[in-house]
Length: 123
Image (cartoon, rainbow, N blue to C red):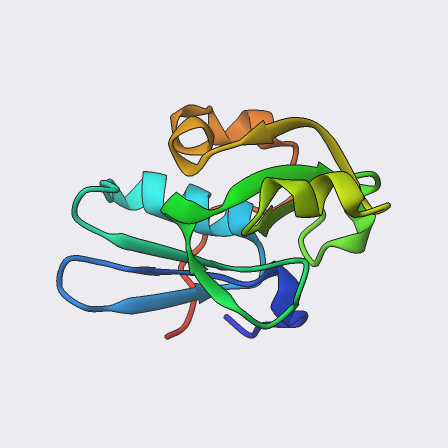
């Protein structure tokens, strides 16, 4: 999948080393759940929303919603930051509920309020 805005980008590397890129974190989660990927056997990476360029292991990121979801490529409004205090300082985010990757992974992806559908991205 083409990455339209880097600060929303995500990717997963499966246990066979295949890399799948996404322009929305929720798209990555939908894809991984649909394919039966397990966090213990796949690697998940997200771009730090605060910098717009740094890739971060998703297990070390904090996730929160933007104040308006239409500003993200697939309208999920979900972003990742390295430091949870970055969320509190950003006027774009709603830091009331910051999630870890494990908490995010455990959620029903349909609860994450996205218009994105699970589809196979291009490498």
